[in-house]
Length: 112
Image (cartoon, rainbow, N blue to C red):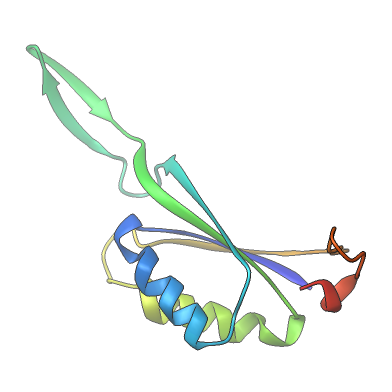
């Protein structure tokens, strides 16, 4: 199993949710996060002082999938959220050693 974490633009969340549902990918977790990458933020003026705002609002979407679906989900995310502009986000893939459904005690892929 793999965990796919995608940090994306907030305005792309609904599109991604719909695309994942159409792709029969269930069980996502969404967090509102702040971060900066190549965008480096922007400069604002507040009461005559220049302020560098370098943390931008982003959304982090987490999905756990079987190894066989990893590339499919990555492609789906890219095709859905890509604008071609700086700030489109990043995708991280990591191993998941175990998954346990609390309600039933099911383990592994059965718990997904």
